[in-house]
Image 1 (cartoon, helix red, strand yellow):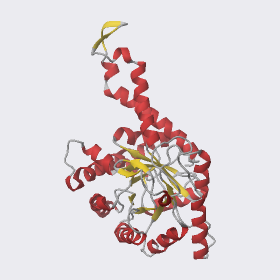
Image 2: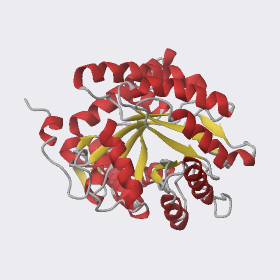
Image 3: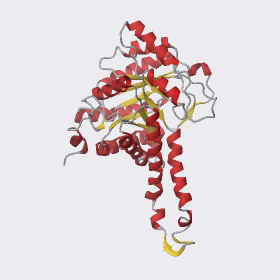
Image 4: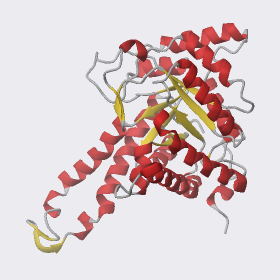
Length: 372
């Protein structure tokens, strides 16, 4: 039996580098995709998921808007996939759930005909054993298939000193590089609260990264042979959606950092660093486009897609409420079974469709429509 991944390897895209095929994208092909996004000024939606429903919404949306998608597993999302009743001692459920979700994507992604990046979200120092477990899986997969299971992992050591943050990142990048895994690292802090990471009371100065810090990280991580990395530099980003005026984004920080690194490298490349944008939900289109101009190649989305998924289920229930009060009977048909309304696939599908629709809107904001 030919796997869907093997079948996909014959297809390439008119508008993307030839290395990029439908299905999961890793290693040099991933680097090509991110560099191409930077040159063409689009960013990939990076979406937090919690199971196959939200995973499939991501890929359905990507097929509709005609661009790549980044499917992102948080530590809590992985645990949820494995099952909330399980003990998560030594992060065992988080590790198993992320691996199970990644294998689901591996099995079906090529059928959607789009490039998919498999990524994990914020990992602070105390959570590193979670990444260690996923790296064991990557190395095992690499030994069998010549590529890692996941495309990339994020380390968020922004609570540590700059030197310790980048020192640990460098140690991990040495391991990542041996099996073609890309590192996303964080400088400064993303405000707000998301999935167990609470920075609601952080000193506001830490929400803004300095160009010197970006340059230091670039220098250190560039020393790792075959190392691939992206930078989540803080420019006032906050997780969640807040009333207008409560979040002061300064994407000029990214432009300044690129100019600073370009000058230090004495290169013609005006955007040497690949940046990522955290806390993207609720951001203005102007701020998003300005950040993309500065070399942002991915924007994280979670709060907005969570709401969309729920809103789809809420609307389904509201439309069919009279058929959802009992297994048999409704005011208009007292003896008729209601099974076709309460079949869980019906409400779950309504959530999927609403989430996919919201992601198509996000792709428009990110210039990521019709880029294949």
